[in-house]
Amino acid sequence: MAESETLPAWVDVGALEGLGADTPTARSAGGVPLVVVRRQDDSVVAYLDACPHRGVPLSETGRVLEDTLVCSVHFWRFTLPEGRQTHLPDICLQRWATRVTPAGRVEVRAPSPP
Image (cartoon, rainbow, N blue to C red; front, top):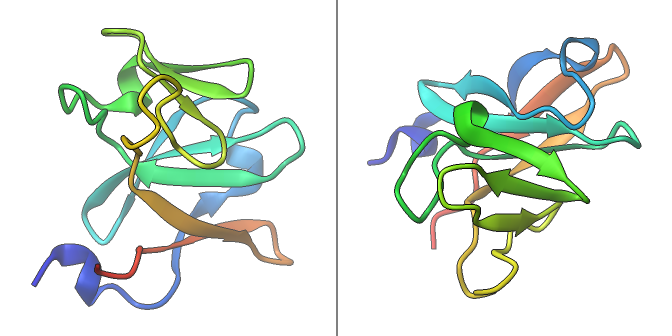
């Protein structure tokens, strides 16, 4: 069983105010590394923290440019919020559901197994 399958429905990953706008930020949910991005409109997206090309952490190598998350290693770009690679749309980041609680906490939920 994968680690994400043992997580509770929603996992707190920190305060919304602790996330810089358009800044990829490392977070963890039950030991699963995530990259979390607070967008300009205060919506939040979260993905498994690994570029599908080489597995490098997007929280370390990524940057947000024109509403895409760009891996700075080989410049693969992923649309926000969908996480689709812009030139190879069949390649996607593993997206986690997100919500912001009334108290301003960011919570994530693991994707359902296929």
